[in-house]
Every structure is written in structure tokens, then in C-alpha cells.
Amino acid sequence: MIIDPERCTACGLCVKDCPIECVQLLDGKAIIGPDCVECRTCLRVCPVQAVQEMT
Ligand code: SF4
Ligand code: SF4
Image (cartoon, rainbow, N blue to C red; front, side, top):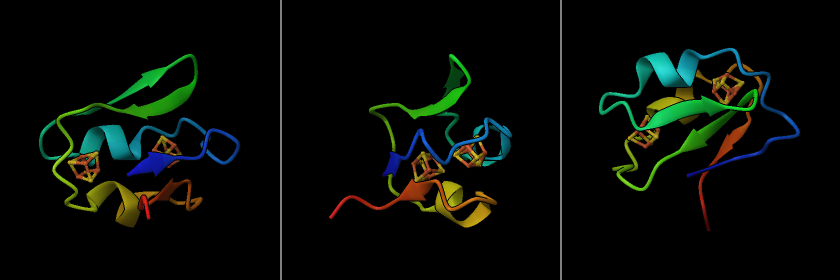
């Protein structure tokens, strides 16, 4: 998963909803850590479509 910093508004929803707490806010942008299990929860909850799957 990748987060587009241009779109991210730092709303914190993905941070709150990630089941393994691997998203954090850094300098006003969400950052996904290396432990991500690709469950897609963050992609689903992001209100501005800032989270995208890596292709
Ligand atoms: S895909 Fe799932 S595990 Fe990975 S950052 Fe998003 S919510 Fe967390
Ligand atoms: S849910 Fe979307 S806009 Fe909100 S912090 Fe996460 S990536 Fe950024």
C-alpha cells in the first residue's frame, strides 16, 4: 500500500482503523510501516482516496 502525500489530509482514520497499528502520522502525512499485511482497511476508510495499492 502507498499513501499519496498530495492527497492525504492527515485525518487519522487509517491510523485509527489499521488492525495492526502500522500506520502513523509523520509531519502531517500518514506513513505505512513495513509490517503492513495488505488488509486494505486503510484504503477502504480513507475519505480522499489517498491510499493506493502498489501495482
Ligand atoms: S493495508 Fe491494512 S495492515 Fe496495511 S496499513 Fe492498511 S490497514 Fe494497516
Ligand atoms: S485516511 Fe487518508 S487522508 Fe486520512 S490520514 Fe489516512 S491516508 Fe491520510
